[in-house]
Length: 194
Image 1 (cartoon, rainbow, N blue to C red):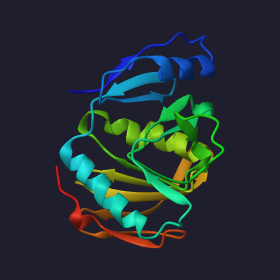
Image 2 (tube, rainbow, N blue to C red; image 1 turned 120 degrees about the vertical axis):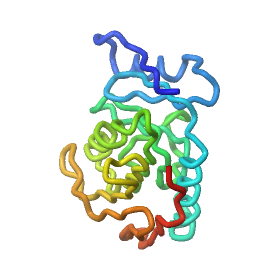
Image 3 (cartoon, rainbow, N blue to C red; image 1 turned 90 degrees about the vertical axis):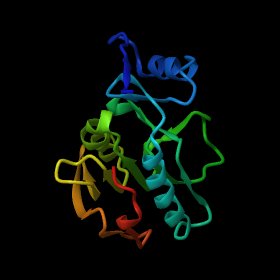
Image 4 (tube, rainbow, N blue to C red; image 1 turned 180 degrees about the vertical axis):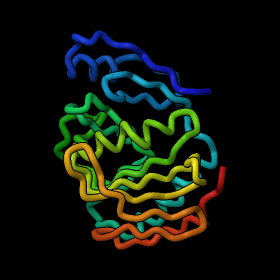
């Protein structure tokens, strides 16, 4: 099953769009995001997709500070890009003073990870990194199971405007290093292929 988009009134404000996203009853188990002002409803990620996210998450727990967490279903808001995005993994400090329960500002994230799905890999390659960069998220790891040149993991950093600089790329089977404050090496050989 592929993603479904819900058109919105172009005159609608960001606050109205977020309120609609929060209050609408979406299909249970689906992933509902606002990508470039369009509400996108995707099916739950597949098994191999989840295995990759879980293996990365397990490694991250060993290196993050006590007051940070690793989240798999946390929405992050990027109002300037009309985005309410749910990365496969978000690493962010815990905030007791959060204004809302449904999401956090994207600028609070230290690292986001996306694992591509065949039906919507374009979002993870183009739309989402632009939003993450403009929000100033320091590191973005793209695990692209469907890359034309074969499965790869690419780490992006040094955001400027809506563009990241590629820091390193590893084909599945190779290791990729996530720099400080993580100082973590992830062996992509642990990832199931497509």
